Image 1 (cartoon, rainbow, N blue to C red):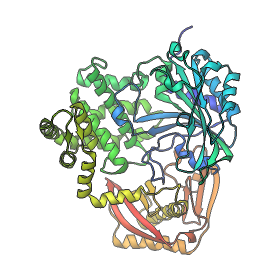
Image 2 (cartoon, rainbow, N blue to C red):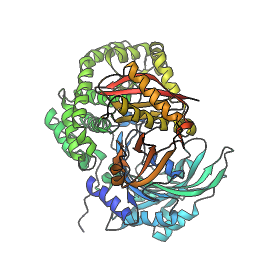
Image 3 (cartoon, rainbow, N blue to C red):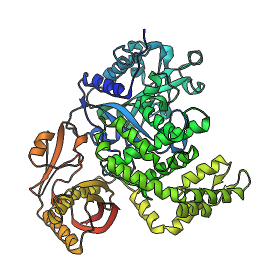
Image 4 (cartoon, rainbow, N blue to C red):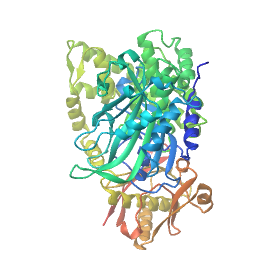
Length: 602
């Protein structure tokens, strides 16, 4: 029988179609930039945008959902260049919000993995892991038994402790539960030697994880006890790139159809061939991954740009790392943009925001590459000078590392990577001290910002989120009807609101906006939520820049006739709960995008 070949397009659609046939609503991917959650910089998993619904809030699309979510994980940036690591990836997922549980999810997982109509993986090549149980929660015999009923051999079912087969809670308290992971057996001879509790002792390469089903069935309370949840949820995740690699028998995620045109473009521009040597292959992979990541960050509806803080710093770092590796294989200046165009073309039908923001992607990529290119060679010379003065195993002092950042634009991670290549290390603590001495105010602000988040300060952030609706409406009325939200971030202390506008507000405009918002607060108007179709919401005058992520049914919030927006929440019940609104700062984000920071005081 001829082997089935999967493309990224066919695998995405196959997954969505499968769960659609099981009664799931297909919802679009949320933004890469989490709304109103300062505790993380990027959406790191498919469940991230759905946390309120996993905690019990009603989702407008129902209790069975499926999607393909754009994700960014930055913890493994230094590993990019190997066979499997990517900073940007797509997560195939499905959810049950208090609907079905293990009894349906495990047979469905088995069906999708093994049915010739879907992935067609031989049953004998699949191993699963389940929670082994401990003093807190019992062994997950139920999942193991369901796998046996499906046809998985008992000898291919393994048990792991919380470190291996448990999800959450995200903080010290909250929803959590056992998970069951599905793996492809790559080495049957080694797998056959293992007992039911020996999974972690398998030699590297014996198994490769393909899918994970999380069963949220407990709540960890403040005393550290695990209580059964009233709403039990299912949350699953299957990495698109890794799954494509496994199904098509490829050596790495970079050898799938996703990167074909991008690889051809780099080969054309450099005269090098992917795979010709270890160093060249690593350079290709870094350029491929980081250019794709930068393209999606720049093309996101929330509109981030390179900067020295937060998401902008990560964006700057991946662009500059791509530039440095590009120089290693003679990638011409300005060529990242050519690689980016192949990425936009590849994803155009799935993520139309990339095409819509193509001009911005090109402008910002070129601008950042030009900025770094001017100092790259000088910075490398300075680095070589510092490194030459040290013995193998020596340490670059923090002041020198900070000078490379401050004068030559080298993120400290790039300096650390270059140092590692020469058998050196960097005094990261010393770098931090030098950075703090130079930018103490900025550092303090950043620490304050990340000291809290939505989950810990629901009342404060809910009030501030509601105030963003009033601010948005007031800006339209005072300054221009053309103003639209470009981004939002909320901590317990303040709201941050980005919007399109050519200039800073005048003092008179600032006062007019404040007075208008405070006037609506004083009127104590109810905040009315209604669910309706996107078409009805638009017809009734509701606005929302991020409409595409909500699917066919949306939540709308009306504050009298003053503000009507499509939004995912959370919100106060009445405007009188908010307190006194005050604009404390205006900033320039990028060409044509301004930022306001504002507070509420009781």
